[in-house]
Length: 103
Length: 103
Length: 103
Length: 103
Image (cartoon, rainbow over all chains, first blue to last red; front, side, top):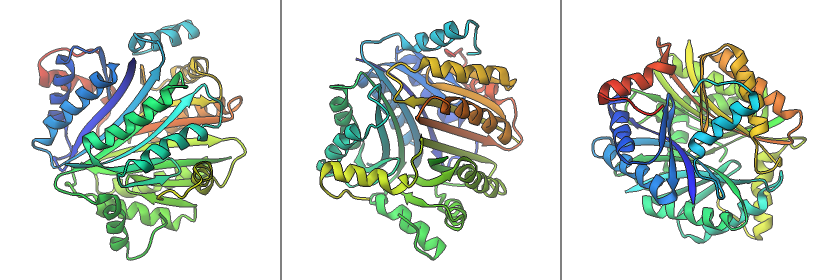
């Protein structure tokens, strides 16, 4: 049962620039072995429920060590019997539009 | 370690009205015993990470039984050492504004 | 053409507590005359596209005056020919469940 | 005053697959001339407030023509005096991590 999950997680009270903290999350995501794609507003990962939420939680536990307040937003897209959607969704749009999009 | 979690979960491909499916989720939330507040765009619950995500997952597993595609959005707010925020946050705003707000 | 819009808007780099800034937004929302409901994670307003986004923008312009970075999340629900949904959606859930929910 | 805006917009009541409708939005975004990046869960665009919300609205007006219910989620990130963040944010993470990420 594969799901697509996009999330972004930021500390409040750690100044205006939070990339130091976000980089740690990306390190966790990149080492998780799950398929992922970073974008300027968040990261999309694909996997089972336990896998993807396991990664989100690991990022949260790391951030919690030195951040007193954390704001997180998560979006999930589940579609029965469909895997590999981390690449297939955009490809399907490009096929419909008969041209390449900026990814 | 208490967090505030707001979520909304809807099936795609089950018609324009989805309240039948949302009502089942509210039934699960209401019976969970966790503090919650429903609003026109989602439900806020308060509890430990495992508690709040346990409720979200239960709603998902129920919806998955007869919905082939499910879209979910989740927002989390964690603040170290603070519980009871499901009521305290709005009260603090009312105190600052010196008047009641519509809740 | 009425829509339901929920939003939350927070400054980054203004410390861990942001209620001073959120209170200003609630003041703008409360004075806008649009139907609204505050919840612990955001505020839902109902109105035409221009009305609801006008309120969001006003809150943004106010916050921008003294906040160098602002994070905002917005959810929209449009349903053709349906107004008064700021109260009707929860009422419909309660009717389906045959009991009152915590609002 | 440049902002980053990510959004996703889907019809309810138009079946389980909504890519036909999403493709139309991508066509509008791609022709808008604004910098954008598509990802499996949404599209990020960069521009002034009026520009980015103008694109969102155009997509909404198009979808509204034949979709009776539309669900939209939007995230905004504003940072004073910073443009070009649609590429700069991920590059800054890669620099911090001293390796390339999957984009």
